[in-house]
Image (tube, rainbow, N blue to C red; front, side, top):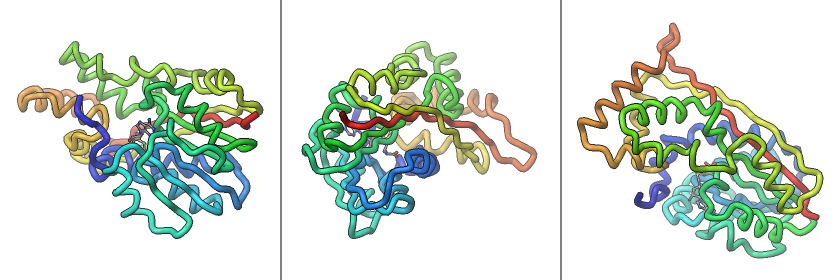
Amino acid sequence: MANIWAHGNAYEHFMGRWSRRVAPRFVSWLHAPAGLRWIDAGCGSGALTSAILRLSSPTSVLGVDPSAGFVEEARRLVDDERVTFEVMGAEDLPPGQADIVGSGLVLNFTRDPLRAVTTMARAAPGGSVAAYVWDYGGRMEMLRTFWDVACALDASAIDADESHRFEVCEPGALPALWARAGFSEVRSGGLEITMEFRDFDDLWQPFLGGTGTAPAYVATLDEGSRERLRDALERMVHADADGQIRLQARVWCVSGRVA
Ligand SMILES: C[S@@+](CC[C@H](N)C(=O)[O-])C[C@H]1O[C@@H](n2cnc3c(N)ncnc32)[C@H](O)[C@@H]1O
């Protein structure tokens, strides 16, 4: 598949609007003190950075992401003198520059999550590292329904379905990874949001944007297959009496102290 993280703007419509709901929940869950130097590893279009700025009174936030398109979008959306955005992978974080590293919906996209987390720990000696990932195989109803429908129509879609690809998103995987990485005071849990879509089009259109795993899969389909997928998905989701479609989404989250 081509670079699925090229366009921050398309991501914003597909998942950014929901990750902006999750990020404040995560920051509140962390209860980090004010006045810390933060790193947002895999900042995307800046959802977690914005929540940190709003809720945690940081001294500084360095947001890094390997996608230049995302960094550009983050710079456009987040205007705050405490923030710097840089094009960089989580594996290349500078050592010793932070008190806390947070990472939202990213670890499963790194080549080696343990290596990424170890680098995050080096970036915040004596501090803490915390992260969250979607519960792709369970209560992430938007993607779960999409992939169930896609796989029923096209057996090869299973290769793209996140629930089969990302071990780090399975229940219990994050605290196990934090234990392997040597963190102490490991805390973990699940956080849920409700995604409300105005109507089916509000749910479907962002799948056509090409950015993100599911949209990248849709982009490989010819027009007929895309229409069949759209119609089958529409039959699977149900609108409430007010016309809105409401789907639950859960993230698994974890935090730990750097030994
Ligand atoms: C699902 S998006 C999440 C973006 C943002 N954190 C949010 O919550 O909206 C995944 C992000 O991970 C980034 N990413 C992929 N590989 C990465 C790596 N090795 N290090 C850091 N970020 C990475 C992508 O560029 C993309 O911005």
